[in-house]
Length: 85
Image (cartoon, rainbow, N blue to C red):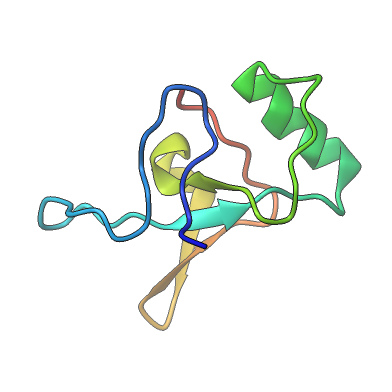
């Protein structure tokens, strides 16, 4: 099953061609962190929706400060909340 972004009006999917230097990555919803999940859904304006473990948001919805880099790999910070919609 290909990954695609679940954000409203976003059509990003894994495997799409991107301009050089514009990496796209996908992040699962924090289903085991109720407080953070509510923050994510509130930012999306989807408070009454319940995501599944197979749904993702793409990196385009997170500020650069939401990421950390280790050994050249980009990770989403554990306290990151998407803000770009």
